Length: 367
Image 1: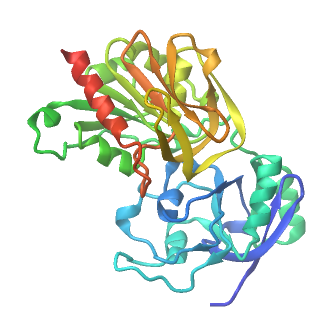
Image 2: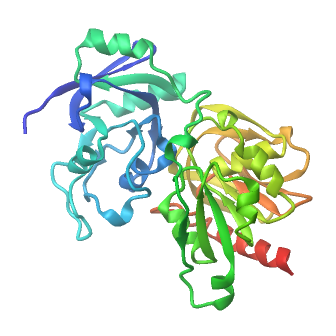
């Protein structure tokens, strides 16, 4: 296959050269907000995570695609990220689980990419200047620079509506424990990952409902608990859902992860702010304040909750890199939120206990 030259141009005019991989968009230009992810493995799970809608993912690990792709590792029906940037795309994949190669996967999914990029330089630029909108592609430099000047980030964008499901899906509990199978959890799909659903089915039967579902419609399903999923975009721009969550609080136990955590906080009067370059990776240390235990966690978020903006909560988890809020519990109702990803496909799994905590909360509320 012949090499097709491509380039990245960020909104501040910084340019990086490379070669095109994946799908080829019309006009030769792909736009999005550039972020970096530090995972060493799990590139397929990252690419297929709906929370990356609107973003171009730069992988800091230099060798991507070496073990191929397979359908079991997809976190959604199709990737929603804007694009992918890698240093070196593996020319040959090797794994007994592989069903194909990453480049073909990107083409089939309609996701454009660029390889051969100095991702260390790009990552340092994002780290120094914050997540930046920009473009990449095979168009000429003048076209890319013009497009970069009008590129936008995720600020002020409600991207949840673009990734949520449009119908209800029921997932039966995968357990021989009758009590667990009898629990019913309604999961609000803000961009839910498949691994989250698999973890929830270990504690309950799960009904996944669209993001626009009303509190009355959720309660009509007689849930023992409500789960608020991860999702993309600016939590402050997500309209309507915090009001729904507020109606649910005190009537049914609530557990939120990532965007769900942020919208739970919003329902409690909390505020969110944007981090300079976000947390994206599988190696973030978080302290559980109740036990003092440090968990290595998987994270993917650009926004964070200000704990001082809420009065009805206790902070439970804190990021040890920058001191930001990673978890809280409500003091007057059965509800808690976690900013990071305890389901962590493919890992680490230090925080898996949080699903069991939700199960105990459900049982205590019912007794």
